[in-house]
Length: 220
Image 1: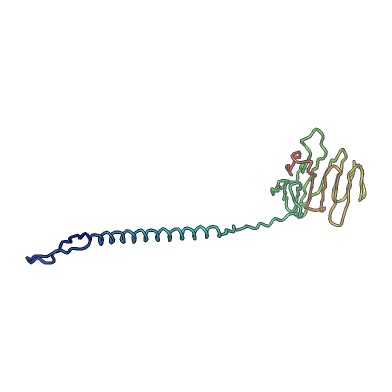
Image 2 (image 1 turned 120 degrees about the vertical axis):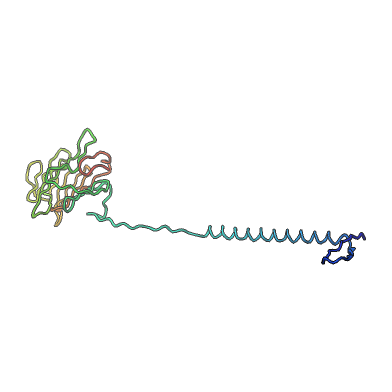
């Protein structure tokens, strides 16, 4: 086979003669191939290890579940069904309109609580008046016009079209009743009102009145 001469390497400063070494030519070639193979193998191992890490990270990302925190809010109202068709008054001049907004309006004037205003025919109009008894706010007077009839309510008397009536009373689609706690007025037109004869008043309307009401209750 072909031989390659490897020159000697001088290992001291002394004068002398060194001799080279003759080795077969295929040995350096094999050494270079082995070295290249080792480098390629290390590179492949690094790429495989990196791919395994990325795969594990992606799997971990897929299996992670994030549960958001939840804030609990407690809302108190006169009724458990206080939806956007209900408006109420309670306590010391507190109001809650159809949109659920609560506001404070002290005053003993005559106020339009709610009315049917966005139509050529007004199906109802409800007005209220507050008074103060022993420095405590109370609803003292309620005037209702429903489908052409007038209902006037105080703690001492109830009149229907100007005439005193005894409860229960029903006429022209309007019913007035009294329980141990409330005076209740309901109408076939889609209206129901409840008063505790003190500070609390609740009005619920049929959905047909949506976007057609005015007054302290606003609209819905």
